[in-house]
Amino acid sequence: MVKVIKIKPAREVKKRCVCENCGATLEYVPADIKSYSGTDISGGPDGCEWINCPNCKKRVTLRSW
Image 1 (tube, rainbow, N blue to C red):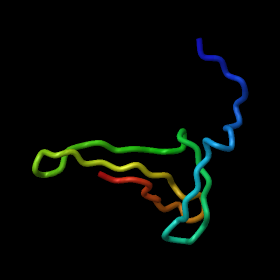
Image 2 (image 1 turned 90 degrees about the horizontal axis):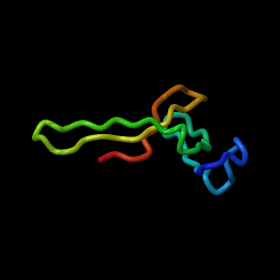
Image 3 (image 1 turned 180 degrees about the horizontal axis):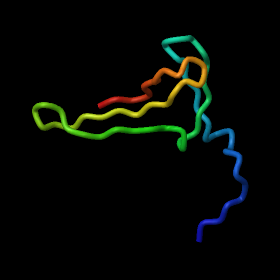
C-alpha cells in the first residue's frame, strides 16, 4: 500500500535546468513535466518533454526523441 508521508517533494526528486530564452535557473519536480508523444512523417516515434518557464512563459525542452 502506498502512503503519503509528506506533500513537499524530497530534495533528491527536484531537478534544475536553465531557460535558454531568459537565462533563469529553474527547479522542478517530475509532476511539473509535460510531454508529447506521436509519430514523425516516416512513421517513427516523435516526442518531447518540457516545462514552462515561469519567468518568460516560454517552453523549456528537457528531452526530445
